[in-house]
Length: 247
Image (cartoon, rainbow, N blue to C red; front, side, top):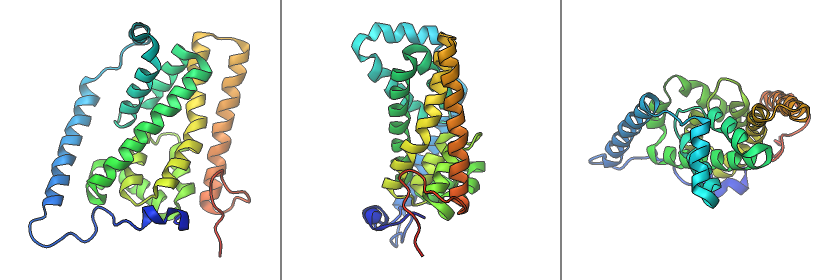
């Protein structure tokens, strides 16, 4: 794992599950209660919350005037903290704002939501988050504990792995904050831009946007292969922001 001296401030702090004091384990009870509440909230969101249609969302945002950007990024951040797929929000960003503005808002929203989930997981603790992740726990923990920077990039880029278990897993399984934020920017940027580009192309199916969509998806595939090779230790070049391993 990428635990260098620059991350000493993050690594040096004990994990939430470390060395519980004797006597009533109030911290454990509190985390379990928080877990139950979080699970109930996620279940309620998954069953009852329906994101507004694009037309409806556009009408609402237009009614907000100058704060529409803030409202969209804030809604995106909330969605990124739940099991609701962020793909819907990214494509909607392209439909409503175009490639440039939509990409900016989507990246800001997903990074804020991911960061919030990371710190919530630190409060919950490792064992509690492992139960929260369910079927995703083993995959997330293996990638994060065995490889750190590259493993986290692989998880964020890998098709079929949603963002929310990666975010919660990173906070619970000891990924340093710097590593989490840097990999978040590097690995979510191509994916968000590619999804936003799809939304922009749906709104305006031009040749230029069509070529742009192909190029962004090619970048996502290339980044995924690069991250995978780096995770396996067979890449001759480090990922952007990754420190070369020594020894």
